[in-house]
Length: 379
Image (cartoon, rainbow, N blue to C red):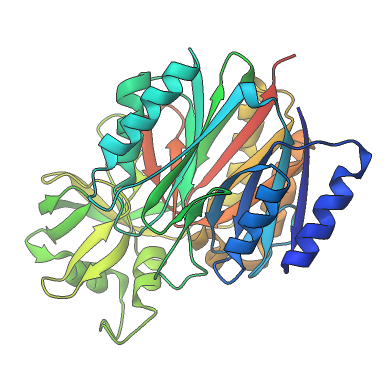
């Protein structure tokens, strides 16, 4: 599989970069598109449609193809891949029937390929992305290879989108299913956030909505332990502070803990919609941001993934927006280090959540994590 990555801040720049990429008989059939909500999504979609290139598209909190992080830009990974080796699916879930929608897509993929592997992305902050994962897993099996992210919106926490060349939704799912007998895909979710304090008990929750922890409204106890000030609806930065300064960690009896930051506040009962399920009765801890050695941990994790995938045709990197705010310019070191592991065309985005497996873990929704995915066409 041949792959090239391009970027731009205007439609004209992307159009020119696409023409230049195709000048040497490179004939892409598929584009992974990560872009700002401030970009002209509809015109970009139309551009790729005119070139008969299918699009797996996601809006972001920042995007990159190399170590320089873009702002309010568009990045594209172009892939020359036989259409027989993949199918693109799109659906919406305004009824919040996440598992049902995902299962329907998985059945179509299973009908197309005996061994499908998946990239997926969803939109809307209240989406229970673990239900999306579960819906696919129920059809394909527990060991399914599947990675992805939840769309961003330049840190506004208002409206995010997934899209193809033909469709777009702020409450939907885009899935790239590939033939696992033709395409190798490997990846791992890597974190580094440290837990702090004693375990606490989730005393009331439903799905990904946490009402109380130790009998205290979730918002109030989070504000207390995070030392947050001005916890009011008028404070537009409070959601970002909750998600990045004192996120919850869901403790596991077996396997690593997973991040569950609050992403939406219900001001009436002061509950939090978290990034994934937080079962009633489960144990949680609050977190502290990681030290800078977490960057080295991510690169070391990539070297372990390389043992399973020594060579790659392309790298797709989903990483949390909270990491960008924590590490700032140092993120360029992490991005450069990952690209050097495989030295292949790369695309990346800063997401609202990451979907995949930690080492030895189940398929889950992660936050404040990095999800490195490598793809290679089997020779």
